[in-house]
Length: 415
Length: 156
Image (cartoon, rainbow over all chains, first blue to last red; front, side):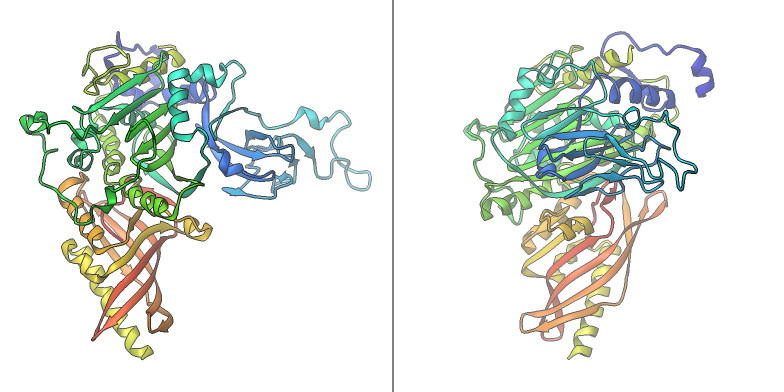
C-alpha cells in the first residue's frame, strides 16, 4: 500500500480488541500520529531516575518519542525538563548524555543560553556590537523558550508530559499499578549498576506487545521455564488497569507444589534436562516480603519496571522510526545492598539485556514479526488467547494485557 | 620475558578468536582459568565505574553455562563472527600474571549474508602462565559503543 493512497482513505481498525492490523507497525502516517497523540499527547513518559539527578546541577538528556529532552535538577532542588531544542534555530541545546555542576545550557550555534528550568536567559550580541545589529527592541527573551514538560515523581522514577490535560500521575496509573511500583522502589534508593542500549529491528509497539505477553514467556524462553523462575501453572496473575495501557504480570514460586505435567503433555520444547554447571547464578536472596519472585510492570506508552528475582531494571523504549526502536536498559541495585547482594545482582543481570538468558529472544522476535508482515499490511494479528477482553486475570495463559495495550492505543489515536 | 609473554599471548588470542569464529564454543571456556572473571561492558560504563556487565561470569562454570544456553536454550537467528584482533600491548608483568590490552573488531555475518561491524573495543586482560601456555584469569571486554544491535549471543 502506498502512503499516497492511504492518505485519501481513512483507516479502519477491526472491531473488538482481538485483531491488530499489520499496517499499524508499518505506516509513516501512523508513526507521526503516535508522536502527536501519544508521546506529545495525554500521556506520562518515563524520563530518567531521580538518582540520575541526585544533586542540583545534575542533568541527563533523554527522549519523549522522537523529541529530545533535557531533565535537570535546578539550584532550587526541583527537577525540570524541557525540549532539547534551541528556541532560536532549533539546534540541540545539550550534546552530552549527562553531567553535573551545570549552571546553564548554552547552545553552541549562537550561544543562546538557558537556565536549568529551560528559561532563555541570554542571547549573544542581543544589543548588537558598537550600536550596530542586535535584536529588535520588541524582542522579549521571556517569549522564547523550548517547550517545558510537566514533571511527576513516582518512587524515584521521573515522568514527564508535554500535555496540560494529562491527569495527575496517581490517577493515570491507578492504585494497583502505583502499589506495584512501590513494592519494588518504595522507600529504597536505587543505584544504577550499568546502562546499555539494545537496538531493536522493529516497531516500538511490537516490543511493548512482547513485554505484556504473558502467553509467550514460558514457551519462547526456555531458560525461564526450566529453572522454574516462571511456570504458567505456578501461582501468579496479571493485572490490567482500567485504561488497558498499564499492566503487571507476576508470579510466586510454590516450592511445595508437585511438578506439573502441562508442559510435557504439550511437547513444547520448554521442557528439557538442561542444568547449570554453576547454579550460583540463580541463588538469590529473599528481598521482598510478599514472596513475589517475578514482576514485570509496564506503563503506557513506553516504560517497563522489572523484578526477576534480584535482577531489578528499568527499560525505556524509544521509537526511532516505523521499523526501529531503542531499548534503554538501566540495571539497578539499591544503596543498602551488601557486597554479597551486589554480586548476586551482577550475576543475575545475565538474565536480562541484549545477552540476557531470558530476554535475548525478545530482541529478535519483534524483528521476526516486522519481517514476516512486510508484504501483508492488510492482514491482522490474532489475539484470542484467554478470551477477547482486557481484564485482570488469575491465569497468565492469556493475551489480555496485550489487548489492553491496544485498547489504550486506540483511545489515544481515535481508532 | 617480555618477548615470550608477548608471543604466548598473541598465540592464545589468535586461538581464542578462531575458537569462537569456527563455532567451537565448547572449547571457549578452556581459555580461562578457574575461577576467572569474564565481563562484557561498554566504554561509558567502564569509564563511570558502573559494575554491571552485558555478560558477567566469575567462574569457568558460568562460561560453560553460557555455551550450553546458546546451544540448548536460547533462540536466535544463525550467525557467525569474524574477530580481527590488534596487537596486544603488554601493560604490566608481575608474579600475579601479565596485564595486557588488545583492540578488536568483530564483524557479524547473518545467515542471509548480511555483514556488519558488530562491535569494536578492547580486551583488558590478566593472563596467568603455566608451562608454555597462558590462561585468562580476567577478560574485561570493553565495547566502544553503548549500542548493541538486536542481541549479543555469541561471546566476544
